[in-house]
Image 1 (tube, rainbow, N blue to C red):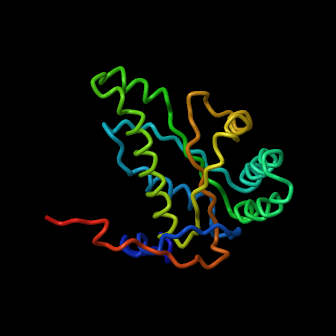
Image 2 (spheres, rainbow, N blue to C red):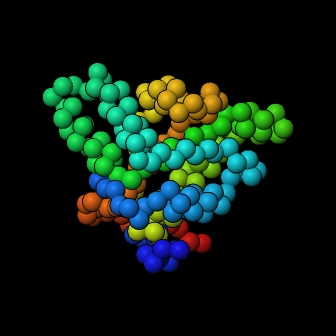
Amino acid sequence: MSTTTTTLKEAIVNRRSIRKVKKNETITKERINEVVKTALHAPSSFNMQSSRIVVLMNAEHEKFWDIVKETLRPRVPEENFGATVERLQGFRDGAGTILFFENQETVKTMQENAPSYKEQFPFWSHQGNAMLQYAMWMSLTAEGIGASLQHYNPIIDEEVKRTWDIPAEWTLIAQMPFGEPNEEPGERTFLPFEDIVKFY
């Protein structure tokens, strides 16, 4: 366990979007493997476990962000593309990227096995993936590793599936670049507690 590991409360409070990350030799495949194992304890409806994860590190991670850049090039106005490249470079400079998928075959099987909930399983599937994303983000934060959640899908989906031989029934949900924090996050603002929470 890393010496930077914090309490659950500290991880929740300190979790932030770190969009500029960099490589660090202490962020190894073995260390990220342990983070992933921890995050996989996140719950899912009916214990359906429809989420799938692909971890890209080193050259594969850099290849992913090159794909994103080239996919965006014809879609972003030329005058804005420089800023887009700069943002993407903040992700590419990191140690790796976690790709979150949902296995639609699992969702379909659950719909067949529990037809009275058929309409709900796609929603529950995404909720489970969101909890996994959060568990992953919290686990990285507890390790002192910076991360953010990005959504360049669906425009990159076909190229990603082709490049890493991803099963056709997996749907890309989100991307989480990670690494040593290379920026100080801005201030967060919160709605008044009383507007969000009601006690009876």
